[in-house]
Image 1: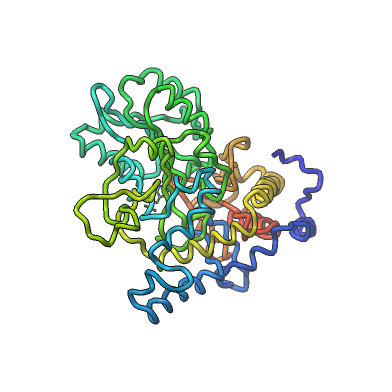
Image 2 (image 1 turned 135 degrees about the vertical axis):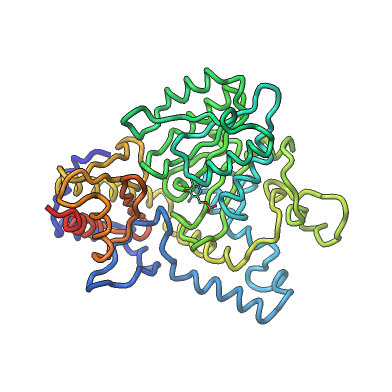
Amino acid sequence: MTTQQPEFEATRACAIELDRNDTMHSWRNEFHFPDKRNGRDAVYFCGNSLGLQPRRAAQYVNEELDSWARRGINGHFRGKRPWLSYHRYATEVMADLCGAHSDEVIAMNTLTVNLHLLMATFFRPKGTRRKILIESTAFPSDRYAVVSQLSMHGIDPHDGLLEWCPRAGETDLRLEDLERLVADNHDSIALILLPGVQYYNGQVLNMPALCDIARRAGCPIGLDLAHAVGNVSLALHDWGADFAAWCTYKYLNSGPGAVGGAFVHRRHLAANDRQPLRGWWGNSEGSRFRMARDFDPAPGIESWQVSNPPVLALAPLVASLELFREAGFEQLQQKSQRLTAWLEFLLESTLPDAIRIITPQQERGCQLSLTVVGGTREPKSAFAQLDPLNVIVDWREPDVIRAAPAPIYNGFEEAFEFVQRLKLAIGG
Ligand SMILES: *Cc1c(COP(=O)(O)O)cnc(C)c1O
């Protein structure tokens, strides 16, 4: 994508025309938008933190509340979507979004919990291989999880943590730096854990290359797809990632604290070489209620389930994934690239001296991370001005505003409004 789109003109009329020509535009009607404030409609570019509520989410939750009311325990076996296998209503679309087979993907637990479960299995320090490689700007929860996994094995994080760092004055992670780091430490790395999309600067990492690097180094790799799933195209199976985990409340719009997802590659499932931590829901459905002492694993990644799933928290996810299926991810991707290019064009033409985009142009999904470099207000107080203007974006310390237009519900005129209000907020 370049910014030299001939049909882009920084006017509201152009924005309205782009919305009119957008075949995906009507999907926004499937979502609740936040209330008006001070006479202004909300501009919601925060789907990277919490996606908007699908209108049909309430219906899906109510169906299960109703099933519980009418059937009690029998809701596990009867009704439109029996709870015993309720998680499966999320499997197919999530597998498509991840580029995985349906026996490699499951909705369960939450992201950090899944990272722990997966690391409990995939982090096996042995001999000289005792380190975990992460990126130095990793999301705090991932870092805490990794550090505690090291500690659990009696490894001092100062020795056990290897960090892939951006160069001085940069925020991008460079692949050649990772290659060098891995080459220099290949005897000591036991696990690599990296994001698909970096949460702070929005950089999409070259995931197939990351998987190649891990394979050549002979160590497993896990991907945190929190900011990637529902945002960029993924091919986890073909890339050969060992495992992955993600939350679903960001681009997948499943609601606050909703159930997360996990992937384990078929080669591990088939070889049964990675024994997960067990619980009764990982036991095969046929023998689960025999209450046997011996574990009889369910097929595929279903054997990694631990507890019986929170059906009420899965229901909005199932509702939202149906929207993705109906809309089609490829079309959403095309719109996403155009919408983000439009936002970039508007920022560069309207606020050339006040805003700098730090997201690398050739490696991005829908998110643009912005720093305020001009205007009359300090960056953080400029950000604070956005709230009364009913612009919902987020701030990440030390100095970044993240704006993530989600193609399934955001539009071109909203991007225009965003830039107009940002200009007001910045002042000058
Ligand atoms: C959003 C996010 C999380 C959140 O973790 P939860 O366990 O869902 O609270 C963790 N890691 C990354 C990289 C994230 O972007």
